[in-house]
Length: 326
Image (cartoon, rainbow, N blue to C red; front, side, top):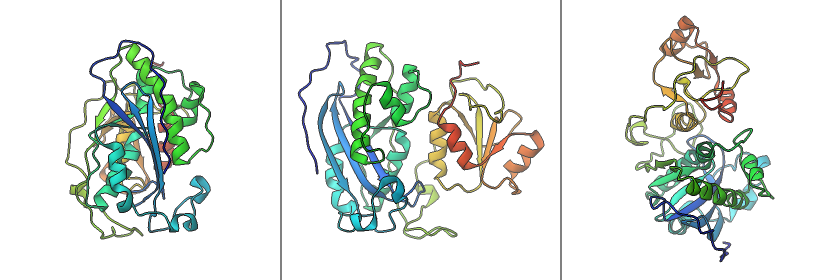
């Protein structure tokens, strides 16, 4: 565990009274991106209402399984063998999150990984709202060529020392979030806060066809909900070689390696219209099996709807063009 405190004073700019009273900037490293993957390290920077660092915390977590892409996060089975289990650190983690807005880069991913771990531990994370720094950078209209963490950091002159190390990634994000928050306050920009809904049930029965340490009951992942209407007009169909544009209607079909809810939330937070069906207005269909006979694939063929696989869609999500671009 690592701790520090700072005494820096925020500039005396008018502060919107509706802004949160505190933030928990979070980064987790995981064994992978799928629904059955586990957290292997976690870091939290606690910030006050104006983005000043109050303290920070870091821990390894034993995932009780293969650590996944070691070449990315550098955490081997040997390193993690003596680490605490998530159940051992859940209380301390909760203390870091309690009463604060969870802030992360692509926050829906970090939140869902955290929610799953708490569900396995038969507990709930004390988080009710999250803020994605990708969404905030778009609200601020930052001139970024893409929405990678290193790009956001470079924009604010923050030096990254160890990419894909939870503690350093959380530090970088905290340092980039502070000027973002101040810019939002100065412009009285509405923060893109989203609700965090905890996963309340967990089943240890693996899904058929997956080598998994746990499985989901689809109805228990979260209550069904109506997504907010996409605020952007549909610019038309996706064209190969060009970026996605905010307002495009995107549908999904078949199994995905990343949880479907996660993909849909990523798409919605990027400004895309997530559709449950295919029509002549659909901009793009995402499927890993374009030769299947599902109704969505059949209709996509009939309407001439462009089709890409999950990997290609993930790349496209990194740089979605604003609705105003021509």
